[in-house]
Image 1 (cartoon, rainbow, N blue to C red):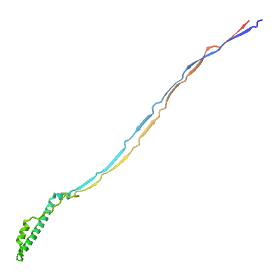
Image 2: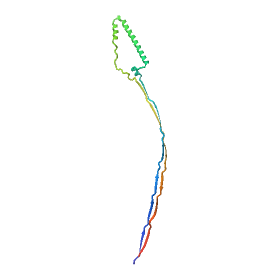
Image 3: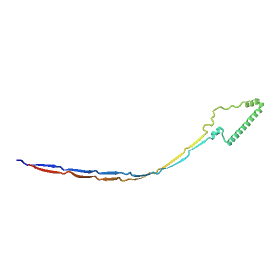
Image 4: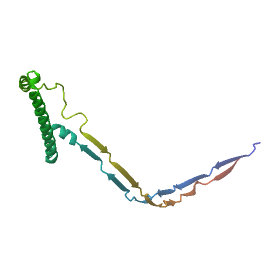
Length: 184
């Protein structure tokens, strides 16, 4: 005897997915920034340097003097020359007056006038060293800087965010099925 057999055949279900991807767009606008910087204020105060040069002694050493001082010098030299001349004549007169005591007074007077007086030798620096006097007062500088702070104004802009949600939808690609057959 034959035993009947059951034959079962199945088809699996197949599910399909339709996917639309989400879209996202983010844009960040730049911040609005305003900076205002006022100029610094600079104040400079100076006093001039002062140089004083006194060359009056050097000019005197070179013989460059004013008319008043020149007149005084010549008057003084003239007075000294007159006094020296009077003294010399008085001395010569005394020598001549004492001829009776012996001696050659006339010959001695003539010899003193015939031989010039020797001048002293030596080095002389004209003008003399240190005759020009200088004084210097240096300049002074006072610098004052007044800084002004920068004024900064910043406005932050929010990001622009656009988002489109994605979609997922399912559909049946193949429906499930069962076939049952009895084979005898």
